[in-house]
Length: 460
Ligand SMILES: *Cc1c(COP(=O)(O)O)cnc(C)c1O
View 1 (cartoon, helix red, strand yellow):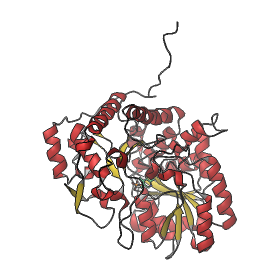
View 2: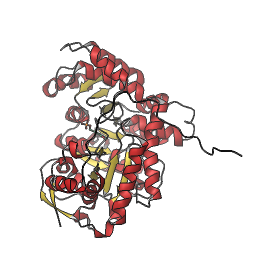
View 3: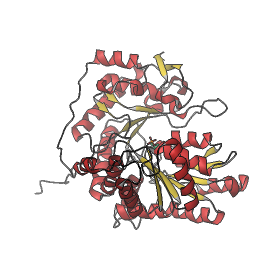
View 4: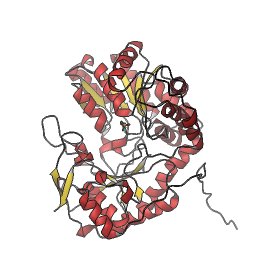
């Protein structure tokens, strides 16, 4: 008789240092969330037990990354660390020219200013908050061309990040290719729930855009997680390494913006990469205005070197298996507790469908914002809203009403254990059990830009 039915895997690392957490009581948490205007972004992190607000800049760095913190070159111009970063980006991603920036949105700002003219149309596979805002500030209009399946939280399409070439073609026919400076292609689409783009879709997109002379700019923030899904799900890629797959993805695009705070396993940093010398030249000029000289772009030398090491570590197959595996573990637990989550389970977190969780609330009562506050009160787990508050207002002042009203449980990389995942799932289940008694919120303060960061609410 066989004892073992299934062999478990575990993380390809062990702990060398730990960070102690403050444990709070429920009355303390009720007060803390009220003081924070029911906005988890406004909670002091000290009052948070397990922080799933974001996977951005919350990664644990490795001993090798901490090592280069000592050897980084802090020269103002021509830092050795810059050349190490440039080398890593060329080697692993294949882009020709690199401009470091302090984080992703700074790269988006520079690139949008260079490539977008007033009145331009920028198609993309679902918006990202900062990306779209920079496109709009540069005078462009974002148009969503993701496949319809991405808007349906129950649809189990394996590549919900794919671009609908038909939708793109309609735009090109309506406005003309000249009005479209580039297609903004995000890999492992954040706002769709960490859903991948297939290589087949990318090839098709490349062929289409080539024919029409349109660039593809790659929001490559989570490209390694996307590559993992291609390896697991797409025919012909199961024997390929994540490293090879990432390089192939990048090869179908003309340039990229990157928030290294995600995939690349650092706490701060980003870059813009481009294959076109003219665009690079202008970017290298513009970065001096906003960030710093083009050989540091708002980063310390040590930061640039930690990114270079982080890029290599992020492309390790065992790392990605543990990373996405942990997210899948949490998602499976939630499914066992009947909690409505976006499927398939994404790469960087679990997205709970707040409309299905709290069906008695209208979207104007902020179901996702409400649910995030309730979870915090229950257990000190901090999540965030990805629904009507995050979607913000159109340039004409009307609210966007996104189809998806989600609470995001984002998992930082290499930070929490499986026991933490159990506590999180049990807390979600406890809130689910009392869902009918939960009342909504009203917004009492609304900032002008990216309102979800600072908006304040009161209980109805
Ligand atoms: C985080 C993120 C950005 C912006 O990067 P920052 O480093 O936060 O400025 C852009 N696109 C996507 C998909 C992201 O997740």
